[in-house]
Amino acid sequence: MKQIFLTCLACGLLLSGMVVTATADDVQPPPWRGLPRTTSQVWEFLTANTGNPDGLKPDGPATGGLPPLPSTELVVYPISDWIEVDPSGSGREGIWPLSGEIAVHLDNYPEPLEKTMWVQLTWQPQEGVGVPVLSDFDAYPTATQTPPEIVGEVDLGFGWTETTYRWTIIPNPEWESFVIGGTINVDELVIDTWCPEPSTYVLLGLGAIALGFYRWRRKRA
Image (cartoon, rainbow, N blue to C red):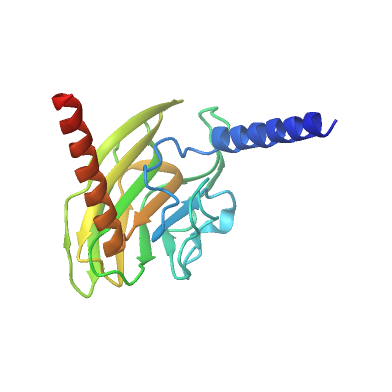
């Protein structure tokens, strides 16, 4: 009886996790999500007050991610364009037809090396035109940033697309910000960050050496 109960409980948890995944567009998570010195933040824009000019806090972390840092926030402006239900029939709720911008601010762990940004944006062109534009990258005090690279796109139906961007900041700054613009509708934003400790690089290096040695031994065998 106990085994049956545990099996049912596990199935229930699995199904609940599947439901959460199906209702959120977290379709291309980074491989390092949940590791030390990572953060995860999701904005789903489900209420009309999401244009708070004082800064909108994340709804929480994505599945399997560590929580956002306290000062992480974004500002959507202007605040009067929020759409409650998607008129295209997708069933999506809480949509921003951007006539302005989304300004994102993220704080960081105090690691001196670098930071990797992983941004998943769920968007739709307005009246069939428009693409996301990421701009106004700023890092404090100073840092070098690689240009955002699109690492994948997923067609979500009804004209909606999930686009995933990745870029690196060297060295890891105290905080950074960027802006999302374009003639687009925005339904969801998922941002993961990774500020690895120096020991992480040591472990990765040792892993690469061990893998190379294993392959060398197999070739000699």
